[in-house]
View 1 (cartoon, one colour):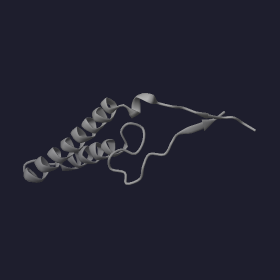
View 2: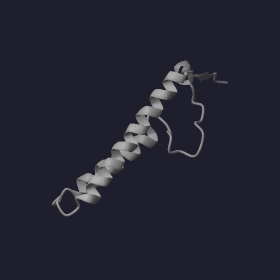
View 3: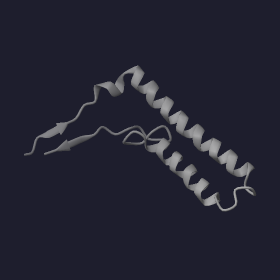
View 4: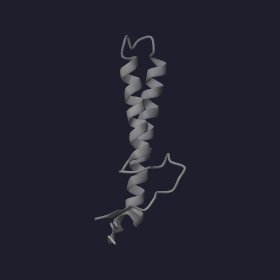
Length: 86
């Protein structure tokens, strides 16, 4: 039988780490919302940059939901414990 190795990340449970993670996710969501507001408000003036703005909005939303390395604040499910076997 192979032994199961479990990787622990003790700093992820600290209040400071959780606050930093929440701050980064909040800033990513705020940036996506700001780009969305500017895109909608200046739709006629953007002259062909609409697809690029849409890509930025999607990119920031995806980063907010998956940062750092796993489901973030947007996921309705709790984080699964990570374990790997050798």
